[in-house]
Length: 272
Ligand SMILES: O=C(O)CCC(=O)C(=O)O
Ligand SMILES: [Fe+2]
Image (spheres, rainbow, N blue to C red):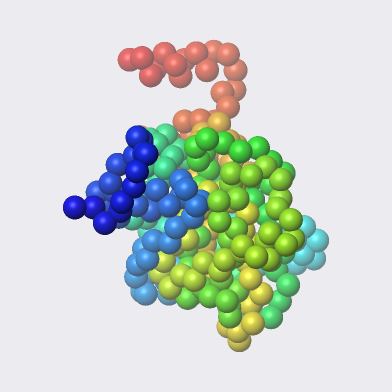
């Protein structure tokens, strides 16, 4: 017999048969969940080393002052372009994909993949509340964008683990200061886990009061009518495009057609 008693209820959500279904239900209702053990400790260590290499390469492309001026310090962008570890182990992480398939349906793409370094005792701009889709204030009856923040350390109040405002994906305006102070929560998440949330949920990094940098990798998955900020197809230049699944996932398939003929030919090829 069920432990949950109720009366006057006609409509029910089906019992979650898998842990993925329960995670999906949490994202649907409160807007967030934590999947533990998504990465092993070895994978976490590898991710940190590789991410630092990518950031060092990107720092050589532009001078530090330029990056500082646009508030992009300590963010390593488009990681999977530089190393397929970030594609296979992180972006396509099996436990996460199982949840995304339920929440976003069959057709979604990756929009961003950023390594975030929250330095010990610094004022990172991600400390500010935001939605991952900036300037958007509408609400939607179902999720169309999901963020997944891999924790490469334990995330907690001390090292500035991510703060969330539960269910805020369902309210248009940014809530009042009093409401936020009363209802914000710190998503305590152990090393190797991934904090998965509706990208329209308000969130922020916390102040890192520890002696060690706090590192995460944020992945954002969207339905394909939302543009990538940085084009994976252009950066990858055809790499992975022969694989049917990756062709879709990386955004090759949903790129804007160059002209009427190529748009028609793409539809024609689909009918074959
Ligand atoms: O680092 C965090 O805790 C939050 C990161 C974040 O909000 C983002 O990358 O958009
Ligand atoms: Fe964010």
